[in-house]
Image 1 (cartoon, rainbow, N blue to C red):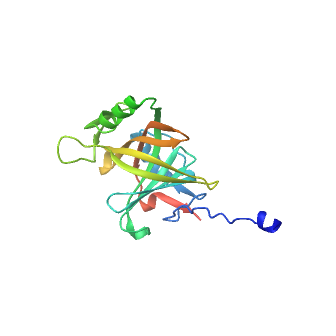
Image 2 (cartoon, rainbow, N blue to C red; image 1 turned 60 degrees about the vertical axis):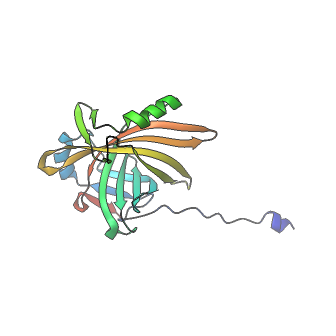
Length: 214
């Protein structure tokens, strides 16, 4: 009887997705020379060359693809977009993002204003630079793109966040671009909705730009 009462129940912890050798608790190195040459044109400055992955996010896309985000200790995330599968052969885009600003949204009226007019605009001004909207729709309005991201933490916890996103970009030298991501995030915390506006800037990553630490 007592053995039944105190019998341990095996708990299965959801496993965070992996790709390109990137995994929860792993790390990667950025090419120092390439980043040193690029940084003067970017909004972000002094990015850490070595970054430790502290959380992993996963979001299915309406196109049938998957969005993976590897959040690091540099207030950054390496984002990998996959189409049609979860292997390296299905990767269509890789970007390194750094968080620029996070603003708390305190009321439903402010949240509705963000969804209607702030997240998606023809152009977005940031730090004296003009970014142009990338994701467009047929007609005059281009509403934010909605995804639901599941985030896996190192301690085994998982959480879910609804995100409403718009992508912008501006040209740099040598046919490169700097990208801007404006996101309205909504998360259930207890009986309340935690809402915020998150702004991040990023740039494309090529296979030669990073080294995965095994």
